[in-house]
Length: 161
Image 1 (cartoon, rainbow, N blue to C red):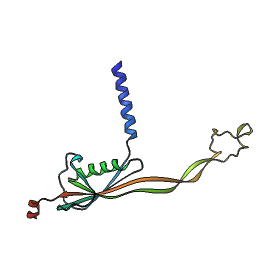
Image 2 (cartoon, rainbow, N blue to C red):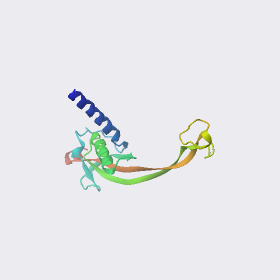
Image 3 (cartoon, one colour):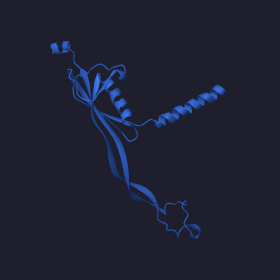
Image 4 (spheres, rainbow, N blue to C red):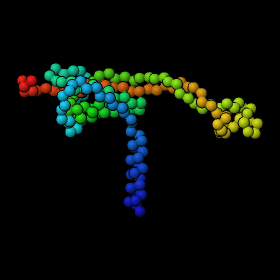
């Protein structure tokens, strides 16, 4: 019984953690037609603030956006994607917070304070005739981070090409 309770608790905790993880959208814009074997993990990749002096090939521009993740999480997603492309490093690109304002809708009561049941306004009473959708302005914030995945070129591969 104790192990069953522990198993259920672990399941509930893992379910909650999966809901708490931020949703990150990643877009890849290839910059070469060459295909390289993927790296085993992204931990060996470098995150560079500027372009290195060493000879390299630009593989792809990677853009990560999210409305709930921070810059560290976006960087991890970019590095993981770059590892699948066979990159050795990622050169940091733009980092910004984008503000969007769009129209949405909110339910609004069409009944005044004098209407409704019992001669007064009852805020929890709902039927399809007493509520309407009204336009509202919604502001959203999206974290934006980009980087260019690169692969270093050694002298032997330069001589053969």
